[in-house]
Every structure is written in C-alpha cells, then in structure tokens.
Length: 474
Ligand code: FAD
Ligand code: AMP
Image (cartoon, rainbow, N blue to C red):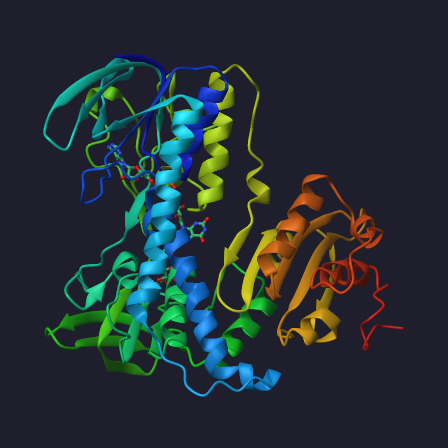
C-alpha cells in the first residue's frame, strides 16, 4: 500500500491533519489502534474518548444537579426532592462520546481518508509497519508521515494506580459518588474533575505541591478563583506535597508534607492529576532517525518538521500546551505545508480554558508576562458584578481584564473569570489576531444585555473610559 500522507494516531491532531490533507488532494491513511468492545475502531483520541468531551459532559450534568440543589430556590423555584441517577449521567456522557467518535469515521468517508486499524511503527525511509488487533502485520509506504500519537497520564511511583487510586480516565467512570475524594495536583484536569465530584456531593481535598495557585494565570484571577472554589467547598491545600499514597482496598491513606511538617488524610478515592507525558510506545524504530528530547517529546521546528525530511509531528507529542485545539491547528499547518502552502501557527495566541464554574480563560500575555518581557503596559478591568446580564443570570462573580501596550494601545492579553469566560476570551483572541487596539474594541458595538459587554467595558477601562464602573478614576 502507498499513500501520499500516512497519519499515525487519530486524536484531534491526527484526524484533523488527515481530513485536511485529503481535502488538499492527497491520498491519505489514518492509523488508529483504539478499538471498542466489538472491535470497531474508535477515533478521537484522548480528547473525544477520555478527555475534553466526557469531562465537559460530566461538568455540565453535575452543574445542573448542583444548581437544582443549591440555586433554584433563589429564582423562586421550589423543587421538593432531587435525586441523582449517576448511572444515567454516565450513560449520557458515553452516548455523547460514541456519537462524536463514530462521527469521525463518517467524516473520513466523506473526505476519502482510509482508516486503518492497528498499532503503527515508523521504520526507515517513511515506511510504516502496522500490527492490527489480530496480530496481522502490513507494511505501508508513505510519501509523508505525520506522527500524532498524543500523550498519557503521568503515573507517580508514590501513588501507583490501584482500585481506588486512579488517573483522569478512571475519574470519569466512578460508579458511586466517593464520600471523600482526594486529588493530587491543582492543575486544569485536577480542578475540573474535583469540581465534578464536589458538585455531586463528594468532600473534595486537592493537594498541590506548589505554593502558587494556577501559576500560569493572571495573579488577580488566580486569587479570586481560589476564594470562589473555597466557597464552593473545594478544599485546595497549597504547599502540600504528597509523599505516599497507600490503597488498603477500602480507603486510600495519603501522606503529605507542608512547611509545618508531615500530615495525612484518608480518602475513598484518589485522583492523580499531576500532568501528562508524550506517548510514543512502539511508535519509532531506531532506524527511523527521529529525535526525542529528555521528556519524550518528538523534537520539531516551529512548523512541526522533525529531523527527517517528510516526517512531521503534531499535538501532545510535541512541545507547547497539551490542548486539543493546538494539536488540530498544527495538523492543519502540516497538511498545508505538505501541499506546498506556507502555513504557520501563531503560538502566541492559543487560548487556555479551565471549565470550572465560573470558567477561567485567557489568551496572550498577562501582566506578569508582559512586565517581565520588558513591556510597558496599561490594564482595564470590568467586574461582572456591574454587568446587567450577569446579575440577571445570577452569575456576577469574577471580572474581565485586558492588558494593552501603554504607548500603542495594542491588546496584549485578555483574561476572564466568570460567566462564559471561554467565549469572551475567544472574542479577545479574534481581536488580537487582527491586531486590535483597546480603542478598536471599545468602538465595537456589543449587544445588550450580554455578558460580552464586560469585554467591551474592560477595553474602555484600559483608557479610563468605562461607562458602568462606579469607582472609575476621575
Ligand atoms: P491524543 O488525543 O492523545 O490522540 C492520540 C491517538 O493516537 C490515540 O487515539 C491513540 O490511541 C493513538 N495512537 C498512539 N500511538 C499509536 C500508534 N503507534 N499507532 C496507532 N495509533 C496510535 N484539551 C482541550 O483543548 N480542552 C479541554 O477541555 C481538555 N480537557 C481535557 C480533559 C481531560 C480529562 C484530559 C485527560 C485531557 C483534556 N484535554 C483538553 C487535552 C486533550 O485531550 C489533548 O490535548 C488532545 O487529545 C491531544 O490530541 P492528540 O491528537 O495530540 O493526541
Ligand atoms: P498540570 O501539569 O497542569 O496537570 O498540573 C499538575 C500539578 O500537580 C502541578 O501543579 C504539580 O505541582 C502538582 N503535583 C505534582 N506532583 C505532586 C505531588 N507529589 N503532590 C502534590 N502536587 C503535585
């Protein structure tokens, strides 16, 4: 078998690269090893199967439950009894996953991508060996190869996987709500999964080794988020490094050290959410000549080319944030370059989102980044407490902040904590991609009443021109 493009891995980086390459007229195969119980291939990778999509399905379901229990009475709606059918909630999540994963095979058909089942290994000279689930081996010759084998959760020796110590995948499948739930790591995944189970009734403790909370986020946002999560009942303990976790089959005993000494806690379940590492098991034969760094990332240049001509790598397998949209856009760039176009990706403007409630999101530089890069900045902040729509929806926690260049007024970053923060920051990303100044955004008409008006007012606030801020400087 010969193809112009062979993609190894069918996650958001790989399957998007495959579709784009086919749309650009190439003959394309996408090799994926993941199969379901019936032996049918499951495309979509971590994102669709055990990442973005199932976690968001559970975040949405659990928020509805939490709102019903906690907030509906404030709207004058009395609900006499509320009960949780966890099995049904999980079925709904699984249904969403199946719909989306099988949808990819449909997209392959429409776009003429050949799906191939099996585990692929890149050999010398762009030959690819595929071993399918029955053990049969096939050799494929490619003109171009795109490596997109993704990542896997990091397992730490002090807390090995067991019945009650699990990674993020296991935490999407608990059969009962754990009474006491421990989470190691206050990163994005730890906070999202901790929120799901806290809303459903778990007493959640998050142990984080670092003293800083959300060190990658704007400092003011991180401080407010920490306060808000505490109100929601998430017990986040910073400066708490887990030193051991023992599962006795019923409970997990976790020992951790703080600046005050040693402490320990007992949990029904423990989620280890200390990050992910690139996954390249069986991916590369030594004579393929692909270089890997000390952390296991395939080494690529700024347009995802490896050291071997015609071999590219994208997504979680390479440097940069481990985010689905980053991988997909890299897939597009590579497909276009293979087709002779001069595509590239603006790594400065990849938005980040934490899908808690309220959401936390940002794009571009925050105050710390800008200042340490030697830039002179000005900022504009607008609180949701002053937004009519946010108040009407009972969603008035948080704020939008814009960081702009002091002299040119060019927007350098948009940060939000509050209702629809991800959507608001996305508007900021579009504005920044077009080189917008704060004034440009201030001159744009926003619908009333929307929570997006907070972005408009934050842009006006950059130049001290906000209308609805009671404490505006004179
Ligand atoms: P993957 O999605 O990991 O896909 C790689 C695929 O390659 C897999 O299907 C694997 O089976 C296959 N494969 C590997 N090796 C081989 C081989 N040798 N042969 C054949 N097939 C192979 N990101 C976001 O942007 N937003 C979110 O909200 C978000 N939420 C997340 C929540 C959780 C709980 C987790 C765990 C992750 C989340 N992520 C989120 C991260 C996101 O899932 C990843 O960044 C994304 O899936 C990476 O895409 P990828 O295509 O590089 O790799
Ligand atoms: P992320 O990489 O964003 O998923 O976040 C993982 C978090 O886990 C980081 O903030 C780490 O500091 C934290 N972490 C890693 N190991 C430990 C540990 N042994 N105890 C507590 N926190 C940890």
